[in-house]
Image (cartoon, rainbow, N blue to C red):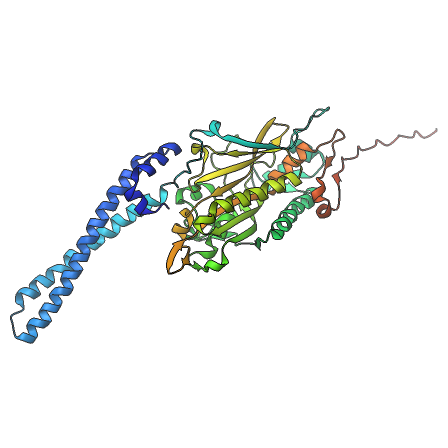
Length: 434
């Protein structure tokens, strides 16, 4: 959430950010109205409580002095009813205010381009886009022709957007994970495997409620949801805690599956394993002091760029425009890989600075001398393995149907290529002599 004092003192800044994102600026006015009503009621409640205590003291004093107390008792009896009514109304308004407050997106950084996704700003491109002298296949046809992927059987047992990985593709998936974990471990990130399910209140500490309810799966009959990313579970690690300042920065490398409904994505990327309901991901997540958050942002972005370069894929780095930026980050930079079959760059991962938006929701603080302050959080998709695999497969496919493996992965896979399927030789029919 955004600091309520900032909204009170500088509402125009928040309204302007709302406009840039395509959200109604009127929500800020509604929030301020509810906040004003709540503060006025709180003052009335505090005054009634003070009055109740004062009258109670006067009654005791009057009794000791032998004075009449009937009038004071009558006045004292009227207060609880008034107080109960005011307190009930105050709670209702506070809940309405907080619900709206939690839905207000983070304030956009000044460097974010304004507009739709078409206004995304390309920062730099890496690697050479391959030129093929043969008719290329998209990743789905390529991997299925090698008997490495089975979407048909998965759809029969689980529905669309699920898959079976087979053979060397399973090894390649694990190789990418181990490569990323080793890379980040050498950078002194703490390796961590989080719970794959979280409670609703814990998830609400990482993002607005309506976002995750349309994005991730709920466990029926339980107050539990399958995680859509390790980010949310890593954010919860210090929920309601004070992090010792000497620990900063806390850098996690989380490994987990991610489960997504992909609601609203019908008809888009339905073929293959680019947009699926289940995938593995290595996530960088950082807790730090406010003054260090942009330095940490540069660090985790640099890590991803370095990993992608070692994997040898063509990719580019872009700053997301205001209407393409999620509600939680103040700024997001995406890494997009080149997909030859689509003749386009597509998202492989993102790097976001969330400032104190998540830590305010999750009550995560640190002690700065004698003052408690909110920490900052940052997250970065180090590698989403299924998307990385299909990007590598399309770019590294060979004329004979084989797939070259990047050198950085050889020590993890144990092979340098996935060989093409050998054609089945027809048996010669030998005619028997009569």
